[in-house]
Image (tube, rainbow, N blue to C red; front, side, top):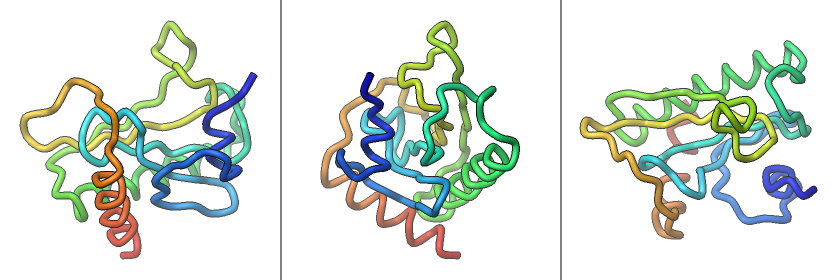
Length: 133
C-alpha cells in the first residue's frame, strides 16, 4: 500500500514544507481545517503512536509545540489545537503517525477545504520565517 506521507518525505509528492530535519518533517495539511493547519510527521514510517520510539516521539511533540508558537507569532492565531489520532475509529485516515497542529482565530472554521497554491505559498513562508526565531 502507498503512503502519501512517505511520498512527501521522499519528495515524490508536492507539499508546502514548513520545517524538516533528519527525523521530522512539517508541512501544511492539503485539506486544512483553518489557515495554517500543519502536520508534523516522522520521516520514518510508523502507523501508530504506539510504534514510535520514545526519543522520536519527544522530538515530534516538541516540534509540534514550536509550530504552534510559529502559528501564533507568524499568523496571529489566538489559540492552537494539537491532535493525534490512532486507528480509523479514532479518525485516523492516513496510517503514518502524525500530529495535527491547528491554529484558531476567534471564530473557528469547521469545514475542511482544498488548500490553494497561493495560500500554501504565503502561509508556509510565514511559518518558516516565524520558526527561525
